[in-house]
Length: 141
Image (cartoon, rainbow, N blue to C red):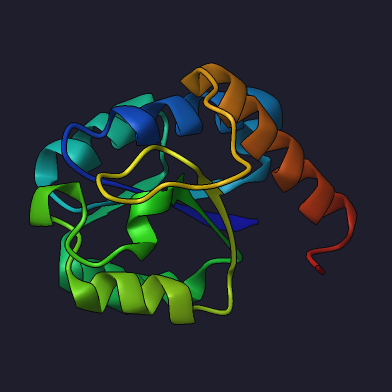
């Protein structure tokens, strides 16, 4: 299965996601790391992504090639990540037919009701369980 992990700024959330996905699925998944900047992409590549791409055009050109998109909630919010995530990027992620499994990381001026704050490792574990369920269901909702 071909998946994308999208992250920006320092790439730390993407690194944690890739480490956990790689430990759970090994080489059964091909991971495309899409960073909003070169540092984020490099960090995700070092974590075990098979390929990396950086920036708005890279995301636009590649996001429809994957079955799953993983990352923080900010990847669907225009101008998030201190402006690194452009409106075009957010629109393309949302419009992609790929299944999106996103971490509810706190965003300024956005409160997610019904979501309890959890440590990042717990959220990533839940993300991996959702991913397993999606794969077990044959890639269907």
